[in-house]
Image 1 (cartoon, rainbow, N blue to C red):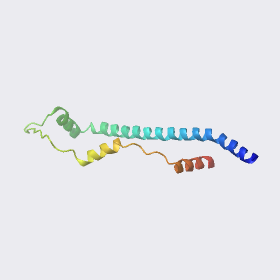
Image 2: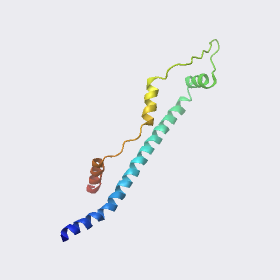
Image 3: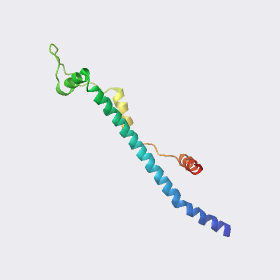
Length: 116
């Protein structure tokens, strides 16, 4: 009986540290996801900066933003076209919620952390 009580007391002493570990783990994964999103945005901005130095980029922006066309050409506006499948898939992927970490993944990460 005493051994069971000691086992329950010892087990309860591990609950708070495990909760703190799992909370820190959740925070780490959220911050890592935010960092990777920021890095992807940074890469996209650097690509855009490098594209800005080309004449084709300037011409494309002049057409898209201001409706300008080169001399001798005539602009036509086509409306009512369906959205392409790639942009719909990209929107669906961006809107999907992030997956949660399973208990098995948490415990394997805890075991790896304890071993190190």
